[in-house]
Length: 99
View (cartoon, rainbow, N blue to C red):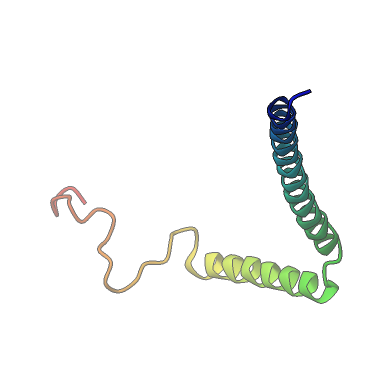
């Protein structure tokens, strides 16, 4: 075996090893990235399951107060929508004789 032939074989083998190492490292990076994304999703799921009961009670109280204030406003003003002083009436565009 001549030295030039041996160098050629080593070069071919090393070229293949470099390509395989590159592909292997790319797979490692991809799986590492997917693992990080999976870990983040899992942590979000765990944190969402551990909701604070005080926050739930506060949200329920706010929803109830909004519902109560809306019904009180409807009782006070009837079924018509409350208008602000700067708003025109709904039929402002009609002639006075049509009203």
